[in-house]
Length: 183
Image 1 (cartoon, rainbow, N blue to C red):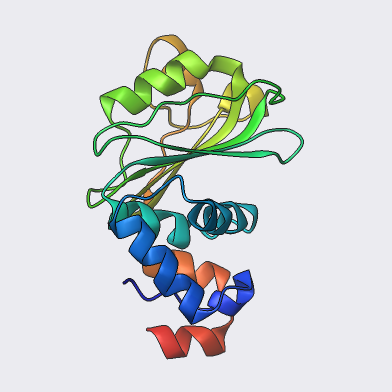
Image 2: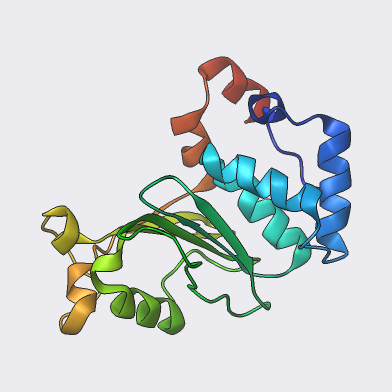
Protein backbone atom coordinates (compact mmCIF):
# COMPACT_ATOMS: atom_id res chain seq x y z
CA UNK A 1 0.00 0.00 0.00
CA UNK A 2 1.12 3.54 -0.74
CA UNK A 3 0.32 6.16 1.90
CA UNK A 4 -1.68 9.05 0.49
CA UNK A 5 -2.07 12.22 2.55
CA UNK A 6 -5.46 13.72 3.24
CA UNK A 7 -7.70 10.91 2.01
CA UNK A 8 -10.51 12.63 3.90
CA UNK A 9 -10.39 15.36 1.22
CA UNK A 10 -11.59 12.68 -1.18
CA UNK A 11 -14.11 11.26 1.29
CA UNK A 12 -12.14 7.99 1.34
CA UNK A 13 -11.53 6.05 4.53
CA UNK A 14 -8.24 4.29 5.24
CA UNK A 15 -10.06 0.95 4.98
CA UNK A 16 -11.42 1.85 1.53
CA UNK A 17 -7.95 2.92 0.43
CA UNK A 18 -6.42 -0.37 1.61
CA UNK A 19 -9.10 -2.32 -0.27
CA UNK A 20 -8.57 -0.31 -3.48
CA UNK A 21 -4.79 -0.73 -3.19
CA UNK A 22 -5.28 -4.50 -3.03
CA UNK A 23 -7.56 -4.39 -6.07
CA UNK A 24 -4.90 -2.44 -7.98
CA UNK A 25 -2.13 -4.80 -6.87
CA UNK A 26 -4.11 -7.77 -8.22
CA UNK A 27 -4.84 -5.81 -11.43
CA UNK A 28 -8.59 -5.76 -10.84
CA UNK A 29 -8.68 -2.37 -12.54
CA UNK A 30 -12.21 -2.75 -13.90
CA UNK A 31 -13.57 -3.19 -10.37
CA UNK A 32 -16.29 -0.60 -9.67
CA UNK A 33 -14.76 0.39 -6.30
CA UNK A 34 -11.37 1.10 -7.86
CA UNK A 35 -12.89 2.99 -10.80
CA UNK A 36 -14.99 5.07 -8.42
CA UNK A 37 -11.91 6.10 -6.44
CA UNK A 38 -10.05 6.89 -9.68
CA UNK A 39 -13.01 9.01 -10.83
CA UNK A 40 -13.26 10.90 -7.52
CA UNK A 41 -9.50 11.52 -7.60
CA UNK A 42 -9.70 12.79 -11.19
CA UNK A 43 -12.60 15.11 -10.35
CA UNK A 44 -10.46 16.71 -7.65
CA UNK A 45 -7.21 16.60 -9.65
CA UNK A 46 -5.59 14.34 -7.06
CA UNK A 47 -3.04 12.97 -9.48
CA UNK A 48 -1.11 11.37 -6.62
CA UNK A 49 -4.00 8.92 -6.16
CA UNK A 50 -4.28 8.21 -9.89
CA UNK A 51 -0.53 7.63 -10.15
CA UNK A 52 -0.32 5.49 -7.01
CA UNK A 53 -3.03 3.11 -8.19
CA UNK A 54 -1.33 2.87 -11.58
CA UNK A 55 1.99 2.13 -9.87
CA UNK A 56 0.46 -0.57 -7.67
CA UNK A 57 -1.20 -2.20 -10.68
CA UNK A 58 1.98 -1.72 -12.77
CA UNK A 59 -0.31 -0.63 -15.61
CA UNK A 60 -0.59 2.69 -17.38
CA UNK A 61 -3.83 4.55 -16.88
CA UNK A 62 -5.39 7.36 -18.84
CA UNK A 63 -7.86 10.00 -17.65
CA UNK A 64 -9.69 12.15 -20.17
CA UNK A 65 -11.87 15.10 -19.09
CA UNK A 66 -14.14 16.62 -21.71
CA UNK A 67 -15.68 20.10 -22.02
CA UNK A 68 -18.63 19.04 -19.84
CA UNK A 69 -16.33 17.66 -17.11
CA UNK A 70 -17.22 14.08 -18.05
CA UNK A 71 -14.41 11.73 -17.05
CA UNK A 72 -13.21 8.63 -18.87
CA UNK A 73 -10.68 6.27 -17.28
CA UNK A 74 -8.84 3.65 -19.34
CA UNK A 75 -6.19 1.15 -18.36
CA UNK A 76 -3.45 -0.10 -20.65
CA UNK A 77 -0.52 -2.45 -20.41
CA UNK A 78 2.71 -1.63 -18.54
CA UNK A 79 4.06 0.30 -21.54
CA UNK A 80 1.08 1.93 -23.24
CA UNK A 81 -2.43 3.21 -22.79
CA UNK A 82 -4.48 4.54 -25.69
CA UNK A 83 -5.88 8.03 -25.94
CA UNK A 84 -9.38 6.82 -26.77
CA UNK A 85 -12.27 9.26 -26.17
CA UNK A 86 -15.62 7.56 -25.57
CA UNK A 87 -18.54 8.23 -27.87
CA UNK A 88 -20.37 11.35 -26.76
CA UNK A 89 -17.38 13.14 -25.25
CA UNK A 90 -17.22 16.82 -26.22
CA UNK A 91 -14.00 18.18 -27.72
CA UNK A 92 -11.84 20.04 -27.28
CA UNK A 93 -11.02 18.00 -24.21
CA UNK A 94 -9.92 19.98 -21.17
CA UNK A 95 -7.35 17.49 -19.99
CA UNK A 96 -5.63 14.23 -20.84
CA UNK A 97 -3.62 12.63 -18.05
CA UNK A 98 -1.71 9.38 -18.30
CA UNK A 99 0.83 7.55 -16.19
CA UNK A 100 4.27 6.03 -16.54
CA UNK A 101 4.21 3.71 -13.50
CA UNK A 102 7.67 3.42 -11.99
CA UNK A 103 9.31 5.60 -14.64
CA UNK A 104 10.07 9.29 -15.06
CA UNK A 105 7.45 11.82 -16.07
CA UNK A 106 8.45 12.53 -19.69
CA UNK A 107 6.88 12.67 -23.14
CA UNK A 108 7.74 9.34 -24.74
CA UNK A 109 7.68 8.80 -28.50
CA UNK A 110 4.22 7.25 -28.21
CA UNK A 111 3.03 10.18 -26.07
CA UNK A 112 4.38 12.67 -28.60
CA UNK A 113 2.58 10.84 -31.40
CA UNK A 114 -0.66 10.98 -29.39
CA UNK A 115 -0.22 14.72 -28.80
CA UNK A 116 0.64 15.35 -32.45
CA UNK A 117 -2.43 13.42 -33.59
CA UNK A 118 -4.67 15.11 -31.01
CA UNK A 119 -4.16 18.47 -32.71
CA UNK A 120 -6.83 20.90 -31.56
CA UNK A 121 -8.74 18.26 -29.57
CA UNK A 122 -6.91 18.59 -26.22
CA UNK A 123 -6.14 21.75 -24.24
CA UNK A 124 -3.78 20.37 -21.59
CA UNK A 125 -1.89 17.10 -21.15
CA UNK A 126 -0.14 15.66 -18.09
CA UNK A 127 2.12 12.68 -17.67
CA UNK A 128 2.56 11.30 -14.15
CA UNK A 129 5.71 9.43 -13.23
CA UNK A 130 7.91 8.52 -10.31
CA UNK A 131 9.64 11.90 -10.60
CA UNK A 132 6.41 13.92 -10.49
CA UNK A 133 4.06 15.65 -12.90
CA UNK A 134 4.94 16.94 -16.37
CA UNK A 135 2.54 19.28 -18.17
CA UNK A 136 2.16 20.41 -21.75
CA UNK A 137 -0.30 23.02 -23.00
CA UNK A 138 -1.77 23.20 -26.48
CA UNK A 139 -0.38 26.66 -27.20
CA UNK A 140 -2.21 27.01 -30.53
CA UNK A 141 -5.57 26.17 -28.98
CA UNK A 142 -5.00 28.32 -25.88
CA UNK A 143 -3.38 31.26 -27.71
CA UNK A 144 -0.01 30.94 -25.91
CA UNK A 145 3.62 31.10 -26.96
CA UNK A 146 6.72 29.45 -25.52
CA UNK A 147 9.14 26.54 -25.85
CA UNK A 148 7.59 23.68 -27.79
CA UNK A 149 7.92 19.88 -27.84
CA UNK A 150 8.91 19.88 -31.50
CA UNK A 151 10.10 22.09 -34.29
CA UNK A 152 7.80 20.75 -37.00
CA UNK A 153 4.26 19.56 -37.31
CA UNK A 154 1.71 19.55 -34.56
CA UNK A 155 4.26 19.11 -31.76
CA UNK A 156 5.36 22.71 -32.20
CA UNK A 157 1.90 23.61 -30.81
CA UNK A 158 2.59 21.85 -27.49
CA UNK A 159 4.57 23.55 -24.72
CA UNK A 160 7.68 21.92 -23.31
CA UNK A 161 7.62 22.46 -19.56
CA UNK A 162 9.75 21.06 -16.78
CA UNK A 163 8.53 18.38 -14.42
CA UNK A 164 7.12 19.29 -11.03
CA UNK A 165 8.50 16.92 -8.35
CA UNK A 166 5.83 15.28 -6.19
CA UNK A 167 6.90 17.17 -3.05
CA UNK A 168 6.52 20.51 -4.87
CA UNK A 169 3.19 19.33 -6.30
CA UNK A 170 1.95 18.54 -2.78
CA UNK A 171 3.26 21.86 -1.56
CA UNK A 172 1.21 23.70 -4.19
CA UNK A 173 -1.96 21.77 -3.26
CA UNK A 174 -1.95 21.25 0.47
CA UNK A 175 -2.24 23.60 3.45
CA UNK A 176 1.00 24.26 5.35
CA UNK A 177 -0.10 22.24 8.42
CA UNK A 178 -0.57 19.12 6.30
CA UNK A 179 2.77 19.59 4.59
CA UNK A 180 4.52 19.58 7.95
CA UNK A 181 2.93 16.18 8.67
CA UNK A 182 4.01 14.74 5.30
CA UNK A 183 7.47 16.15 4.65
